[in-house]
Image (cartoon, rainbow over all chains, first blue to last red; front, top):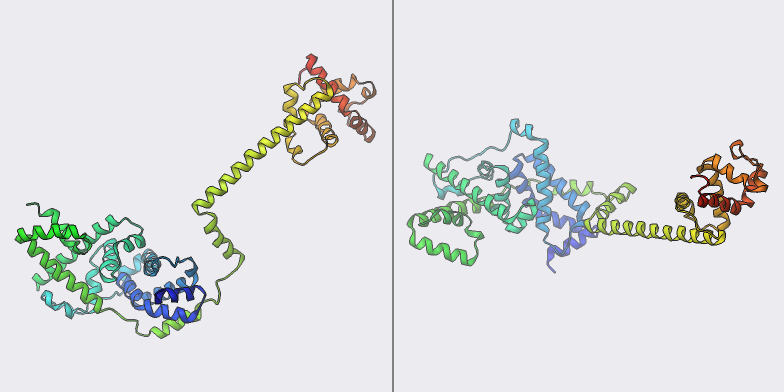
Length: 179
Length: 225
């Protein structure tokens, strides 16, 4: 049995020390995922806290035979979608993360991107494609995990992924040409 | 050459099976445009995702967040009645539970209806044997209307008492009076005037006679129910 499973068994038995370890394992992934989706640092931190509170409260519903990461990503995704619904107006007006570094002039200079540049670039995608691209290419989840997190078919995941990658590729190429 | 069909494969290279990759590679060896496209996509998207993964935002003070969460956690999940009910609802309304529950209800209703029909049929037989002639179907319908009263295991006497009481209520009083007139010891009782205790006792004692005469009238067609 791997380390994560042992931690999860302890968390199911309401062991707070194990819960700390679980938090350490997933905090940055969940924070980054949330921040990429909602682009607001304070609200992202709130969502991270709520995600982990939910994990604690609902951990007994989690089936130990399955992978944990799709389960926690599904909780996070649903909270972000909820946030989008509640803040559809707020997002339009409020200060969001803006790109800090727009000085890239060739593919080789991607290394100069800050994390905020990346979030801004990914944000050119429609919401569904953005979710799928982030889950698959940035959070490195499998196609079947993405499909179960978003409750859509694998073929729909692939189609959206194709369009997302194509749009990003075009955006990056166009930007290079403009520069 | 149909390059369009390979475009999707170029963008979904990571997701291709070994066979599909081999198929694409064969095409790339022959088609220079697709080869360039493939290299561009691989280089830019791969580099972009790698930079994105290595350059992620960090929670500035994770310990503070962790403590906030831990301090706000309940020691144990709330076991209030409402929470317990809502937890159970998940199980109750799972598709299998609903089917099993519905099946049990349907089986119970069918079984109960069958039991009632049997019981009424037995009563009918008992009454017709005692009175030496069959109870006509209209009477049977009247009897079935009593089935709510037959739910508990009543003795025959109790049942007759109930039927007797029901006869007073559910059958036309004029017809019942006609029946009583034909029984010498009851001919002075007028149902329409209401019953005192003695009269009620007389009806109870003579309940079988009442039913006998009443059904006799019906079988002779002397009056209609």
